[in-house]
Image (cartoon, rainbow, N blue to C red; front, side, top):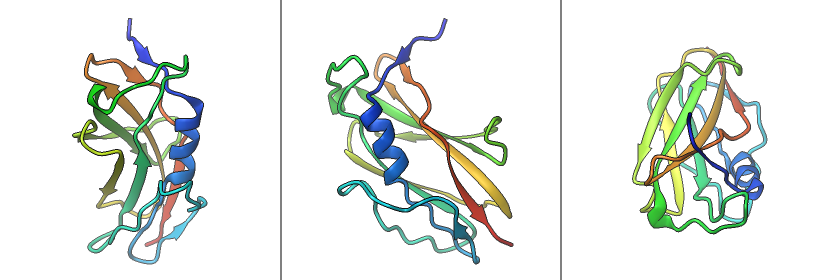
Length: 139
């Protein structure tokens, strides 16, 4: 049985609202690029069709217990063209080092891409995935 970290709803909301999806090649955003505090960053998206995701590290679990940066291990970005079947995965190491994270997913072909993120702690416990966000890449 898979054990799960239960992160606060505040963290999930911050991720969803703090995500900045930017594309090259004429893509247009399908989601709001609002930011919560300093949770979003502008990242150069040169070279190919891409989505840039930005988020903040969680500070607590759903039960209210705090989670220290040193307890975080990595983030897992899941993405795909079907929101119910995210068949691509990227592992972002170094979660314990940075409170603000950004990752560029490159080489996306035309269509609507859906993204979720989850965090894994140093004991291998994983959070539930965030609510999906999407980005349309135009040809």
